[in-house]
Structures are given as C-alpha cells and as structure tokens.
Image (cartoon, rainbow, N blue to C red; front, side, top):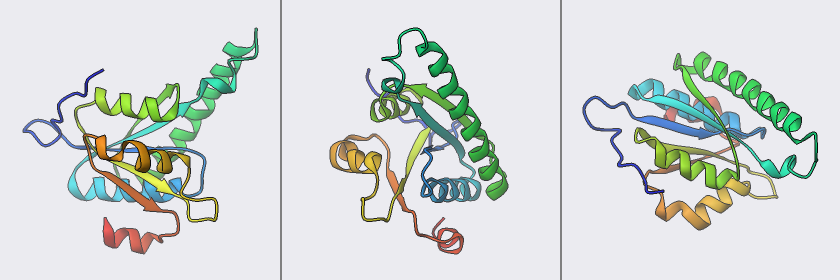
Length: 165
C-alpha cells in the first residue's frame, strides 16, 4: 500500500496527532502531551490500540470469543484514555482498534489517514529500555515515516509537558 499524500496542513484539513495506546504507565505521558499540544494548536487527536492475533489464533474453537474479548478490552481502555485526553484539553479523540502486528498496523493506519501529522510514542525509562514499539520504530522505520515522530519520556511531569506542549 502506498502512503496517502499528507494533506494535514492544506486548507480544509485539520492536522491529527496519533498516539499508540498500550497498558504501560508511560502511555499516559504520551496521551497527555498529544492532548495538550492538540488543544493548543487546534489539532485532532487519534488513539490507536492494536490487538495482536497471536494471542488467540492457536485456540481452536474459542479464538473468535478471545478475539472479541480482546477487542472489547481494547475499546474499554481506549474509552478511559479518551476521557483522560478530554479532561486534559477538551479534545475529543478518535478511537481506533485494529488487529494485527502493532508496527504493521501503525504504518498502515498512517498511510490510510492523510490528516495524521504527528506520531506520539511513550518511552519507558526503566532498565528494560524505552519499550518494544519505540525501539522498533526508532531503529527500523523512523527515517521512512511520512510524518514526524515525537517520543515522550515516561518520567516527565504534567508541568514539564505543559511547558513543551
């Protein structure tokens, strides 16, 4: 699939900030940054959660039930994160759940939505590193993305993020 032309800054289009949502503590920092920044510049906000099929493919007969449960869990988590974003900035976030490999689905979603102008990722600050998504994006795809990538360290305070956003 070829990338859609970036149109987020053309007249009639509104830039959209995309946050990849997971269940890490650091994710809140990325959402907070994106929501504050989106609120200040009048951008839209999209939250993406990816359900990995490997988690339930091998269970014959119950795979569909497990898939539905995983999607319901992801949607509930996105709703909570969207509530947080709304509380922080008043921005209503688009909530997207996709199924597949996280990096592949992220690239596909960016390619499909011409208004996505910024990808915001959370970075862990512990000894285990920044997290698998940040590591794979920064190492493998960062130079090929059609949009800027902002990596938000998980240790930043609200005040520090407010100063940056």
